[in-house]
Image 1 (tube, rainbow, N blue to C red):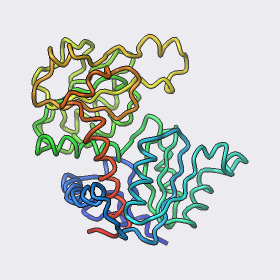
Image 2: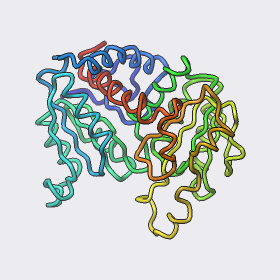
Image 3: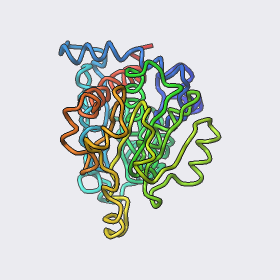
Image 4: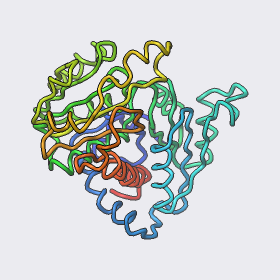
Length: 325
């Protein structure tokens, strides 16, 4: 049985740790993780066989639909020689459909595996899963409008590789700021570094909650809320565009009022972008970035950003399972 009281923070040691929130990380923890990414990239790009996770099995329990997060975790495990148990839509295709509790589901599958990756539509579920698990680490793959820490890790790494730093940055985050768990986690990560300024572009209905806004301010990041593309700073280092999340609305009419309020077009990039900018998106997109932008060198969402997700997850899994130090 692993020790659950050995600290929530990473503190330089990933082995056996749950990954629930960016709040667990320090700047040193992030740089330690990043230091292993080039090796993972080399393994993946050259299709080098690896036995780093040989004999390890990771269970992927996804209560919500996923393609990139599920696919990249699955690929990361297999590229390192491990294997997966995949539980997709457990509400219909597991004992959850019979009324099994989350806690019992976690305790069953930790008996079969060395780590569990979980996605769930309710914020806080990954923390509950971690509290239920006695033997294996839990990795949050997105819980409702809460957080998506591994997405933030790949986003932070993408910015880091482009700018060679994660401090003194100016960024724009656009779309569903209220419900965007990728935004919430990325902001947590950027709070670890000094003198970052982020412009939050969203309709009034989708602004960051006041509690989160004030908490982030206290952590040292400068946040500026804007409602028009005309207020986008022309010297930003990155744009982080997101979709308005239809699944977070109770009424379709409310969603229709705000979807695709802000769309990246050639004209917008010409008017407010710069040559050093990178355009990011956690995907999927549903119209908020025009397809013509895909060929622009600044658009990294289908190039380096998505690939970095694979490499980051490879490095993270190897660290958590004690195969890297």
